Length: 402
Image 1 (tube, rainbow, N blue to C red):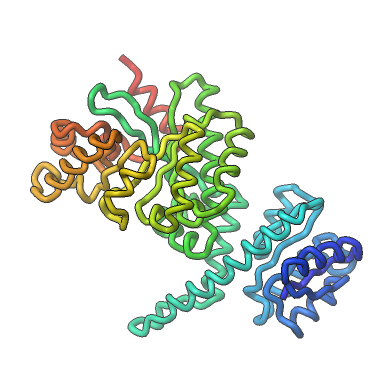
Image 2: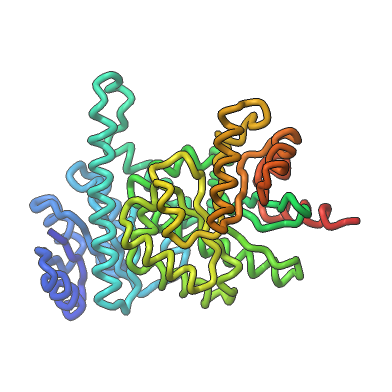
C-alpha cells in the first residue's frame, strides 16, 4: 500500500496511475493533515509526499509520522521541485529516505519506490536475524535503533561525511606505481574517523550499499580527474563493488554515465570483486565482466582464496589481476603452509595470464619472499598505509624525488 500525499490533483492522479499500473495499491491525500490521518488509520508500506503544501508542508508531515509508533519506520520519499542540497539535507536530517525531483519519469518513480521497499524488507530481515540470537537477546538492537543507524548513514552521505583513502600498489620488478585502491572512511563530526568495519555490514544488509557504492565510483572518478588536472602521472584507481551493486541490471550504464559526466577514460577506473560476488549469479557476472572488459577497465578478483569460487572461475571469467589475501601473505617467509599456498597461487595465476598483487605486505622479509616467487606487485603498510587524497599526493611527490 502506497500513500501519496500531494495537493495538486493532476500530479496526484498521474502518480497513482503509474503505481496502480504495476500492481501497487494506492491511498491518496490532498493535504498533509489528511495524509497523517490516513497513515494512522491505514498504515502504508511507503509514503510519497510533496514538500510544498499549504498548512502542513512535507517536512512537518515527515516529523509527525516519524514521531508516531505506527509510522516511525515507514519508508518516506519526498516529491519536490527543489533540488538544492540544503533542502535535501534538511529532509535527511528529519528522516527522509529519498527525494524525487519534479519533473520525473515513470522509471524514476518506480525505481525509487521499489528500492525503498526492498531496503525496508531487508531491514526487517536484519532485525529478525539479529534478534533471533537467544544467547544474547539484550544485544539485539530494536527496529528503531537499526533505523536510526541507517538514517545516520543516509545523513552522512547527504552531508558529505564520507571520504576516500588511497592505498598504492607498486610493481616488484621495477618499483613502479601500478595504481591505487580506493577505500571508504566515514569522518563523523561527533565520532571522528569511523572505519568501514563499523558501518559497511549494515550498509550491505540494508541495501544502502547501492547508493554508497555509486558515491564511491563517482568520488573516485572525480579524484582521478583532479589528479590529471594537477599533471600527476596517469593513475588507475580501483574501487570495490558489493554483490548488491554488481547484480544491478543497469550497473554498466551507471558506470558509463559517471565516466562520461566526469570525463575520464574507462582505463583509469578499475573494479575489484570478491569471490562471494562472483558466485551470486554466474550469468549476470559473466555479462557484466565482459561489458566492463569491452570498456577497457581492469578487473581484479580480490581476497582470492578466502571465498567460495572454484579455480574454474579464473579460467572462464575475464579477470586481469588476482589479489592474494593478506591472511596468506602474513609470515609467508616462515609459515610453510602460507608459503606453499601463495607460491601455488602465483604460479597458477601466471599460467592463466593474470597479474598477481599480494595484499597486506608489512615486512621486508615478506617482500623478499614474494619477489623470489615471481609475484608482480604488492600493496600494504610496507609501501604505505591508506592515505587521504592530500596526503597521497605528498607521498607520491616524495617518492618521485631523485
